[in-house]
Length: 90
Image (cartoon, rainbow, N blue to C red; front, side, top):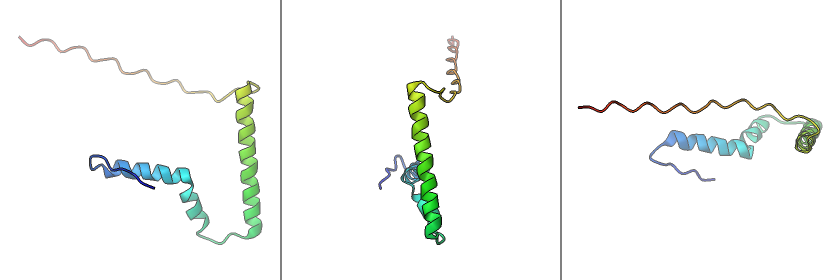
């Protein structure tokens, strides 16, 4: 995995790296590997994750088909008006 550092902005590159790692599920895997997980607990967790995924997919499909209402979107704040032009110096 690579992250480009632009204009020596390491903070920005670190944020991008963290976001990529989060998307890949690296943090979740590190947390899971901290302690031993019994096989029965693993099966239960995986089954619960599958149920969650299925419910989410079904909900998205129902929203797309118009069977249920989608989430209410927050209204976006309008852009700030442009500042008035400064008076000409004479």
